[in-house]
Length: 183
Length: 178
Image (cartoon, rainbow over all chains, first blue to last red; front, side, top):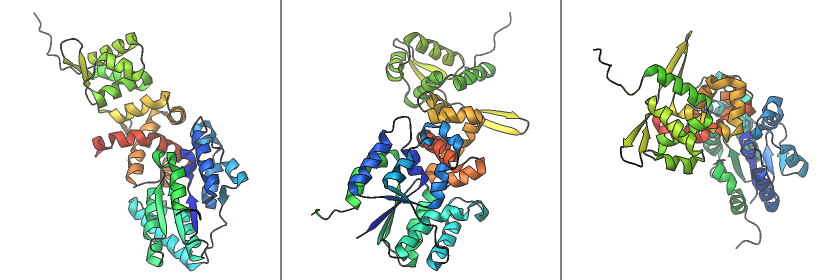
């Protein structure tokens, strides 16, 4: 069974702060488990897109170390010609507008990138299971709801990345990523 | 002989001055927020819990009591104090903002949470009050940092930083809002 971990901006913000403990813990957990977090292009742009955010301890995230060391990877541009991807993203846009009681115009196509990437990974057979790590609850719910309607039942897990979740991430990743030597 | 009016316990202008002090003094805000959530408490409880010098703690409690924001609930020593919830609505030129216990609690965290401190430096207390409204929605899952960023004219990264920083306050005070 292959699992792809898709991560959102909030995961790395959660790792920020004046001491880099949380960041190092995530780094260690992922490297030990041999797992890389995959981030959509949109998330990559969010992480680096605002120099003003460096004023914040939590905005000053050494995420580029993750890219250099290979435990965070940027996903290829989404294939919008893939009908599964474009359909799920359209549905996600409506879903998120509905969850947030906003007009669809306030949600942008890019907001649905996490859900689109999850659908693409499953649809193209890159993995048979996706774990979505995010603090974006509307997108997380969309990811749990929509791909199953296209035949991917029980293939996506949405994990809200709380402080507590991050503290126990090493156990969680080793549980969801069974090793060959596990009983 | 003129009789003095009955004490309401919450003289409005004095209360306004004390609320201004609360917004300006994170340690005072922390003490008020603690009494509100954990009262009745004694001053020595506050000194132990909050790591505030003894003299300061007594002064702060006295100020809050004079403004009617805390009251003594036990008249024998050691005295115990409980806090009154505040909701002070200010209007200027069509802009309205309500100062709530949650906002005081958010301000109280700026000493320990530099993300909140930087946000106040950049966007002021009015900006913080608006961000706190979004933080309630964020924990409910009825907004995300991307929509908040667009509506507050922030970058998505800055929106996520302040929403995460305010999440504990919004969680603690969510019931008061509902």
